[in-house]
Length: 102
Image (cartoon, rainbow, N blue to C red):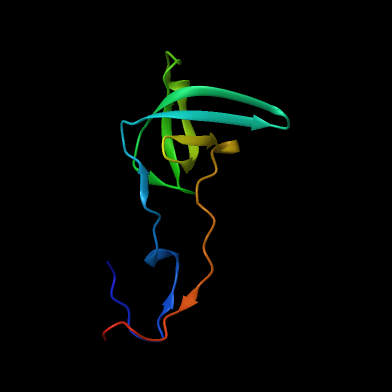
């Protein structure tokens, strides 16, 4: 939990999604291209919340090429991020107007 003073601009560094995938969890990974959806099973390499990009290993791959960048879409599921892009979309800033103790 982060305590902020009134008037502080709340930025992405103050927010985080609840964790819905834990490192080591089995997850369903989808790759979507137009109307084609390819689905496989993977293993999460790190914790993540909805919108976070995590690493996951394709359970059906026998070599290092099975490491994927996956955007978490819900508990136990995600989609492959094209080109290995990383950061989640930044939420809009909000100004705290009261309620927090200085």
